[in-house]
Length: 346
Ligand code: G3P
Ligand code: MG
Image (cartoon, rainbow, N blue to C red; front, side):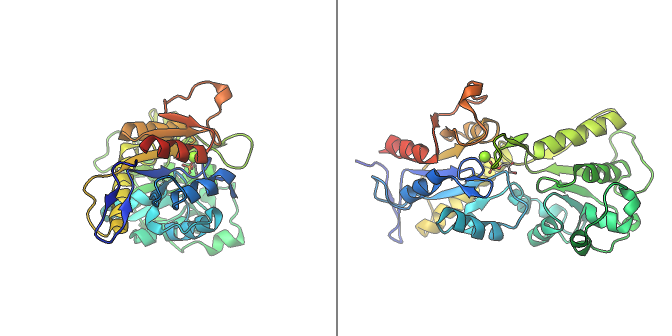
């Protein structure tokens, strides 16, 4: 007998549980769909003992493209319709802080060419610049990279000696760490005027805000070993800043496992459920998190009070010992994770 099926005005039924899925290492390996993912999503689509559709959202530290573009690609990769309000990428949370910077010049890092600039502009950043724009302005800013024709075509003509950058947002994983570390250092040490004099006195009255969106040191793509993530870029940047200035630079961190990102995910999940139920959801179903990275997925879910299920198809490798954060359950893959959680709620 299933407890707690909630019946709603529009005739919809909300089950006692919902899911938040990580993407890389759980549903996908690079461009490839993990076979268990399709079977898991079929269960959520109604093929389960509860006989109801079980809602879910996707919560990834990935990104570098607009949610709308990502959802189209995910829908074809997963074989189910993913709606744009079902996907939270590393930088989606920036929509909730853009009001502070909408009119100010900001530097945006990560992704290919100017895709991330376009994402930033779609969020409401009106003056978003890239490190490729800086190279187009003064190639001598970083002598070891020549813009490709494609990169040059993505740049904006800007005189950075007249544009005080107010903040740096690392939306996604930088493609050219050396260029991006150099320009980020120039912005921070010259108080926003790239090429201006370095002013390293501590605690400036209005410091340049430095915001990272993904703390992952590692992530699982389709290479046998995990790959370095944006967290590794942050460590590289901070090591160089400390070597030059004597201390790391203060920064804001978003992404799993931060509380800010999990709170943001709870809001997105509630909004999704209320859209499905056609009205207010009085009692939130239990949220199960399924992830492959103990540092981001399990730590964050445990912190949010969500039951957490660690799968063996990604970063976590059983042979290397117990996970650094203890999950509620360890499953072979996402299909077993979903089956276990449903059985647990029957
Ligand atoms: O850049 C992607 C990576 O850091 C992790 O992605 O989906 O496993 O959170 P995900
Ligand atoms: Mg993952």
